[in-house]
Image (cartoon, rainbow, N blue to C red; front, side, top):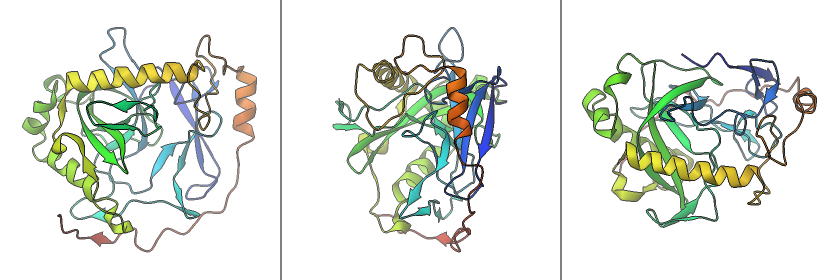
Length: 292
């Protein structure tokens, strides 16, 4: 189940350039899903909050908006049009619940020694593999199982593999080896998905660090800890992330901290309208990719 501590507020019209998903806490105060939702969901710090941007089996490429106040979820735009991922046979849309860990940031000035590439300037990406199809804006409690490292246009783009702690077999899932045991074929399919999903757009296959092999839970947990420290430097203005809005309502000591009224004003200034764009004719098309 998703956390009851947060609610979403949809603004604009779905399938439009103005569509946004804002977040509020259980007191009704607007918050940033990037800055105000804690990374850790328990005191032991072994359960994490995941913000769901894209539910499994869907195609719309939704993402936390880094440059906008309160960082609402919006749909990615390419050449003025809303972006959708293609169905690369046999995968329909995204094959996991896809999202990000709050309070993380892959520093584009940090050269990651294990991959030899710098960070991609985003919160760290999360794949949740449990049985339930989540909803956009859900805040799920997950545990880390491992990671794969995509090299996307020369940047390190970690994909943290997790499972919802409320999944029926969550207690049997503790490390990367458990994924193949209980979800046979999923790791291979995940690497294949990331390798080919941009090919229908005319781009080459993506590359991976570690020959596409997944690293274990301990390795992934260390990666998440590092990008959490980078986020702390960002939100406390120790690092200049000029393209990222750090507006927040509850990060103590942050120079970007604002009042609840100021946050509400940001939300209210967002669009209530918008013209819905037609869904692309190719949305249900299957692409058959010859792997190199």
